[in-house]
Length: 110
Length: 115
Image 1 (cartoon, rainbow over the protein chains, first blue to last red):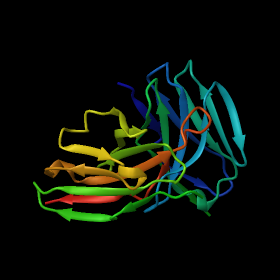
Image 2: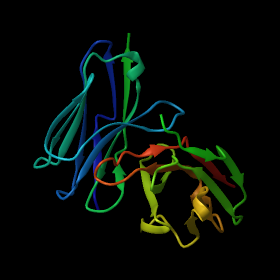
Image 3: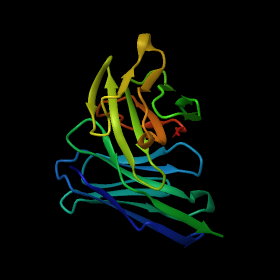
Image 4: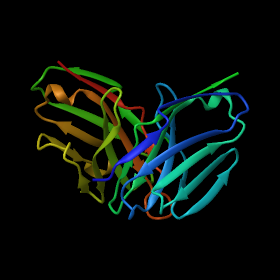
């Protein structure tokens, strides 16, 4: 059974800093990799996703995938207090659904 | 953006009763999902649904669980009978699907408390 794990569990960064979140998975045949963000009491919302090795940038957010290392990451440039939330990574293996990690709680302090 | 609506937001019932959780997915989406989250734990996949049929279900999707979407209306999760361990937040999600867009759009969740 696929294992999806996130690190760190929680993170406090100053406003304007770069934030890096990590996700590891165990199934090398995995096909889809995504990050979701969940503000307290709200629905999880998709942030970014990637299918193949490499990097993708959208605004302040960059997703990086290395399938050989079974690892992908999310980088947030110029972190803002509004970025404070629970970040969930998700992986779809060879099946039809995404499996989620336990989350990283990010706090950006002014 | 597109929204998924879940009704009710909180449901309290006695063990052994039946409960139906309702989800109004994004209108043009084709794939529907239920996930279960116990407080402080990972969000776990229960089941997904496409073209009127269950695609995959996990071990958490017990025989007491069923899903349906009659006539394109609400996508429902029914639990009959409920057990104490069914207490959790249940998230519904929908997606357009296909390699083009696999993003899941989630509802706010239904918190189920089984007493």
